[in-house]
Length: 159
Image 1 (cartoon, rainbow, N blue to C red):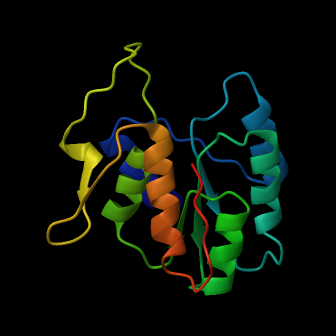
Image 2 (cartoon, helix red, strand yellow):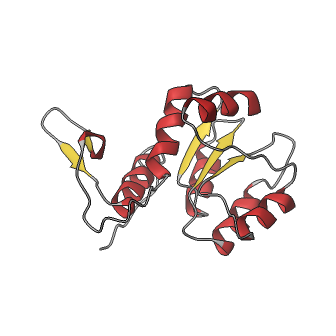
Image 3 (cartoon, one colour):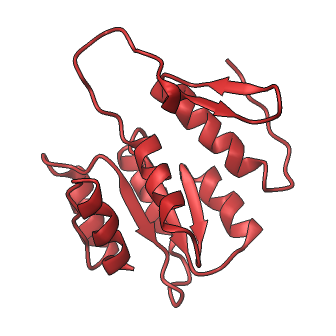
């Protein structure tokens, strides 16, 4: 998994760091030079890998977390989303899907207060239907709605 992530990071000029334990990851998230996004790889032998997600969300609720899992479980996906995951990928997954998810969640602050709507902010969802999501909050909401659409659960969106 790390070699795949290294290829994706190198191709996009992103800095990739890995943590060997959940405790090390939690320490890095609290550090002064904290990451802008976390890729949380749920290890198959770890019975409560989502516990780390729960703590990440408590420590930094604004930090985007993308969960990578070994199993395609609707229940695990729903629980990950409930605990604050911004995206969920079950193996095997396409490299470009992961790359697009990372780009969607990384926010680059240009210092400009106005946001320019480009083609990357417009997504076609039907023949004549589009979603325009220029702000990070709307992109986050769209990503969560897309994940939740795959789970049979009632959803209430307010705002």
